[in-house]
Length: 255
Image (cartoon, rainbow, N blue to C red):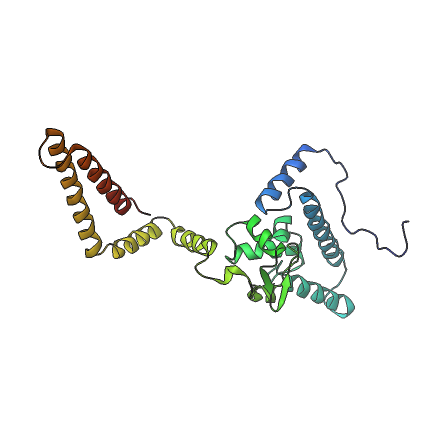
């Protein structure tokens, strides 16, 4: 029976703990959605338990003789409205569509997944770290629970916390995400990136490269003359050559 003042756990654990197929599937989900490395299986079991309750209620309503009027109709409409608000089904879905919901659909509604899908984090694990450390808000409320289920009308309220460093567009992670967005899309994005690079290659930069190349050639000639005993000394020629080589390398191979 348990302690009367404590509610019974709603999360159901697997009936057989050592089935290899189930363990492999859960490990794949844990890696895909960036769940906790220790205890991540419990998060999957929690979502499966919630999904099982949704399916049981849908099957109960499907088994009714008539749900077109009266109490059963109201119960059906309220259940479908609730599932639509949670973002698990579309607006024109029916009870049969509830039975098609998978555990992946449940995991997609987590705040951690939504932060990643909205482009606030470069990976699922980064999204989890941002939430845990207080960098994400939902409206005016700071969120630190990665497993919170985001409602459909709350998706637009996800943002960085006002005091978070990620609000700066010049932050390294923000720039890395912008770079990834530009490179996604195949050949068209590659061509667009090349056009941006060509636009930044102006006349002044080309002239600078030519001037440095000419200085490099002059340094080589000075070193040859020094080796032959003509012009400057051998030691001075070597030092001059290395100075020009270092200057040339910084200009041409700079990121």
